[in-house]
Amino acid sequence: MKKGNLFVVSGPSGAGKGTICAAYMNKHPEAFLSVSATTREPREGEIEGVHYHFIGEDEFKDRLSRGGFLEHTVYCGHYYGTPSDAAMEALESGRDVILEIESDGAMQVRSHYPEGVFIFVCPPSMEALEARLRGRGTEPDEVIAQRLEKAVQELGRAHKYNYLLLNDDVEAAVRRLEAIIDAERCYMPRNIGFVNDFIK
Ligand code: 5GP
Image (tube, rainbow, N blue to C red; front, side, top):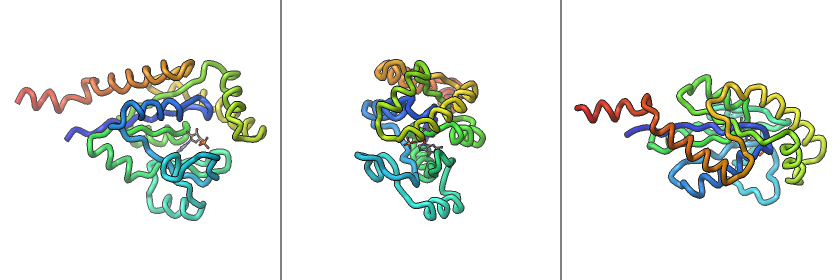
């Protein structure tokens, strides 16, 4: 069975990664969107097991020490991590896997899974990013300031990604993500097994 491809969708908080990935998953339920673990409190409307696995710091550290995360980071004072097992099982079963994570984690994945596809979601401007973070109305001013500072750091790493996904319009951004995922499926180095079997 051909393994699935791993897509890492990253970029600053407020860039629209979550909206784009959710819209993609609606259209492509055959893909697997990883559900991260986090120690931050749930926001209103967030559902355990759907948006995140909300766990305590002790449990996070315990799972981390047992190698339970593919990558992890501390972001604005809270731990976030991608549970390894579910993502690896999905890849092995041939499903494309999407990780929606910030750039520290993306770079960790890149170092031990270089065959992954790294996509940087970027808002059209810093002003647009700030407006989105404020518009969410979920974070106090000081957290918004921290997240904007992080955004500048994340943009400094954008050149390490394979694709830039400009989020000027959600529908257009989802179409671009579909195009990237389709193109990667067709990429010859990922299809050598198929070609060899064909010749046989
Ligand atoms: P939020 O608190 O807004 O849900 O997430 C904060 C940031 O952490 C976002 O940029 C989000 O994409 C990122 N994030 C969510 N889950 C993970 C994870 O498992 N690992 C890493 N490295 N970042 C994550």
